[in-house]
Length: 113
Length: 110
Image (cartoon, rainbow over all chains, first blue to last red; front, side, top):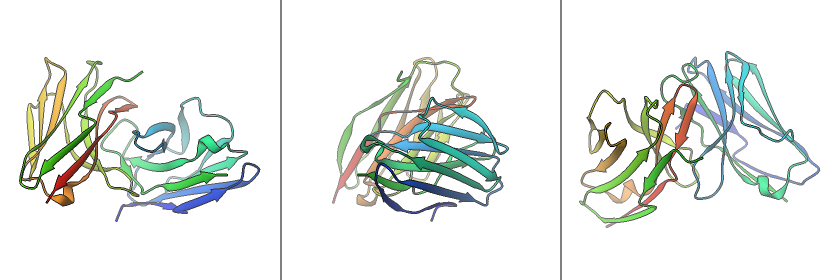
């Protein structure tokens, strides 16, 4: 089992819904990441938090809103998504930003109807 | 802008055979080269990683070979097993920037 826990595992939402994805790690890592992965494609970086501050935003549409309440938690708030946003959303952490391996969670499979 | 090129896209190997996946990179500033293994419905898991000051690293049946001058690195899976069937991603990192290859779907036939 992964040390990065993501909930829910599956999520189906309509285009007018608001939902949140949650991620938790207890490895003492200070960098946390959101990735998006489409089928048969590599993960694509969305956001990076370092010491609970947003460090990188890869020009992600504003319908995706990240939040880092503390060093162990990372949320991704979703609003007014499009069907093309359907994907596997992966959370990852590392000791420091740009240092050490990425530890991925098992993701949330999101379907937008 | 793809900076890490991975091949082949898919690979079928008989049980007990050697699986070889290749990656090439462009940015000479990359200083960390991990390989990730991903099973369906799971997140990528770190398999093995290497830094450019080392030409080879072995962990069990998995070996990374690194050629700095050619800007290439490869994963060798010895004695491949059906349980190794998964998608493998190479990656390269400089500072905050981790670039993934397109992935190789490995099937090991019993």
